[in-house]
Image 1 (tube, rainbow, N blue to C red):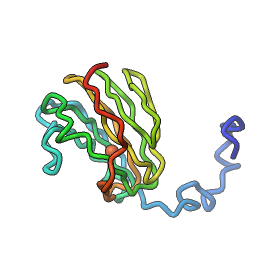
Image 2: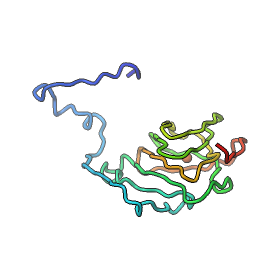
Image 3: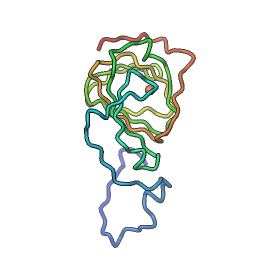
Image 4: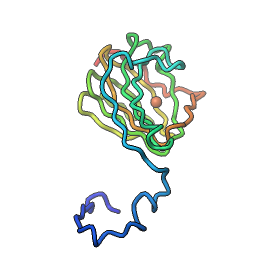
Length: 165
Ligand SMILES: [Fe+2]
């Protein structure tokens, strides 16, 4: 479907075919209604990246493992030795939205500074390096599937981390 041709359609219940739903066509697991409200105590280190605090929004369980969603903050000031390792994620889909603060990153040679309201997708296995972030950075990330691997590259991008905006 070309991206400029998305058309939302409204129909009557009698016109809708319950045997031809998006859920059935996709083969995705059944989803449950789920809501996560903000609780400061839910921001926790995820165990493998001590510099990140993550609030799990509980979507993995609600989607049978299809979707992972979390809000990330930073536990410590930017330290290139800990953070600026070139890597990729073996996902099917990854969307990131900046809620607060800023971050700089390299995506296969393209450098971008992301600010509040910046939203991007990282296609599966795109190589990237975090080059800097503010202490108050807060990101929403939505990833498919919930369980995926991260691979650290042997070679770095050659682009120097820059802790300035
Ligand atoms: Fe990454």
